[in-house]
Length: 175
Image (cartoon, rainbow, N blue to C red; front, top):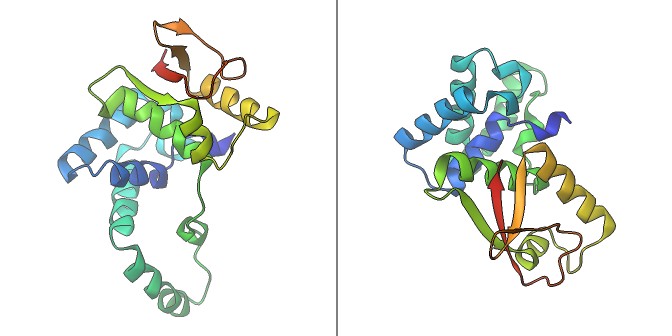
């Protein structure tokens, strides 16, 4: 469950993917802390300064990842220990980031109150060709956690499990 809450790394990645200028990134960081605080990891909920500094640190890191990664061994040698945040340096695809970004885009970045996407696109982003039982359960759990509603064209509420076609366009809204 801990992985479902926003981390500074998640928000830094979202800032980078949306190519937000620094002023917009800082506004986003503040708005998330003020308006979506319940979705932050617990250690950041009561301390805006800690949250903002962590997001900015990881945003800087994402900007010049190669150079900073090259310096990790020297830093470890100087410190004489392993860094605790080394797991953040991997390039693993974070499946939860899609839903975190979806919620943040709808609430704070997009001018629209919703985001559209074909189910096939979502499946492809995760490396799937078909809806497996596990995939559908995963998606439904995330939609429930982030309070995101799905609908088809014409604002007909839909369920990703029972949709007829993969090429139907889904509208995502935060409730």
